[in-house]
Image (cartoon, rainbow, N blue to C red; front, side, top):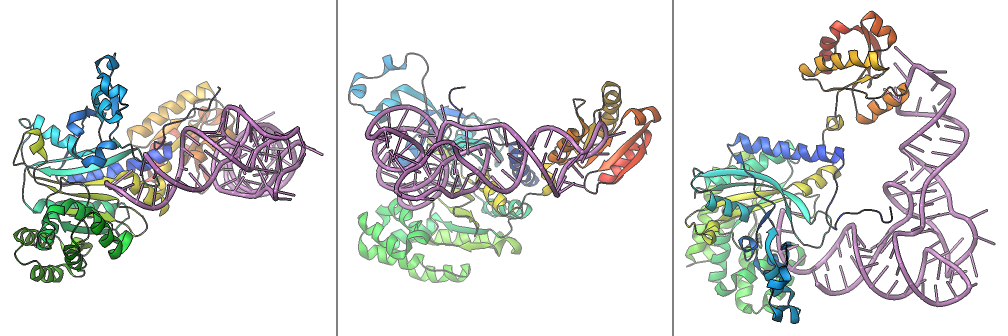
Length: 456
RNA sequence: GUGGUUGUAGCUCAGUUGGUUAGAGCGCCUGAUUGUGGUUCAGGAGGUCGUGGGUUCGAGACCCAUCUUCCACCCCA
């Protein structure tokens, strides 16, 4: 072996223990989603390139992994683009497919394509990997999983409320009850822009204020002015956005300040309705943050982001998009959804040691192998245990006892069962509890009920 | 994509202004215990110092390139 094998930057292998922990997160999420009536779907890892392009902004397009066409793709490419070293233009001609960048746009495509098979409102969840050609950092990978939950085909704000409840349920079950859920509404932001005379600069404004907690008010102000926004408007907008505290009071103050901006009032009413629809326990965690903007430009109403005090970036985000399917030819379909960042949640839970200890055990019972005759009997006993829902395995080789015991210990097996020559003759087993070290003789006939009693 | 940072045993890290045979802890393997893990004791294996070039009598250390890690920007889960 000349070179050590490796995997691409920003991708990872998952060892058994990591995989089990990841599955724990997915299983928890799945179970909560299904308890609210959401159903699973899957879409292909690759989409047609034009399905994805233009949906994530100019920056987003650059981060899409394009798949090189098969065959003699260069013969079809134009000479000018090759001559000019125009990578951007050339890539359009030699690539027709791309890896999906998120789950939301493929979902929109899915809805349009399968609209006749679906009944609306359609509530689905989707847990699959996505790929981004980003520079990797901590909590930032080139291949990572998203858990998306969306409702499409309903304008009701009850959907937003339900999603917040789902988020709360999932994080509570994972032991992350101390998350902060921040919400805002793009209509409010748009109204603020309007009343500050920045209507034409909405995109620039949202991008800048999204960084407020990072670069501070002055930093945001400078960035906005540098991008050509009129200074007077910038000042006014920033003053409004700074409002903080109890949400209903904040909205009241804001209402007095944005006179005439119809859009903002609509947004404020939406936020009020949403908050009223939330159970008390969830509302307590929700904070109205007017500085929350989110870059993805398809959001049109509520926007949601979940953070944790011990983690630098958001672990969940989403919002309402009024017309995502419009670009695929199906108009009037409003949707709202959130995306859980499974990999970040994993990193956070690992750092806080929140995974249950029992997650390590792959089987609860191990039979020591003493040779063919003994192993045959063990296979039967193991099958009996399995039929009672106890996971059991027989060590495959007649290795040294010490080695087999160590294997059991490493794997986190809770009970080791020893059937040697003596036991085989007498119809007995020696049952060893690995936690206490105690060992006792149990008749083979009574083994299953004895194990059930010890383990359950 | 821009700027910076990191890489030494399976893991976490030492390694002086360039100097001979590159170390530690943990883990791993063997034995004490051929029917008993986790604890204890004794012993052992494991490194082309990320990779490729260069400077030098001599490079783990200096220079260049490249890959990787992490960070900031950008953007985001």
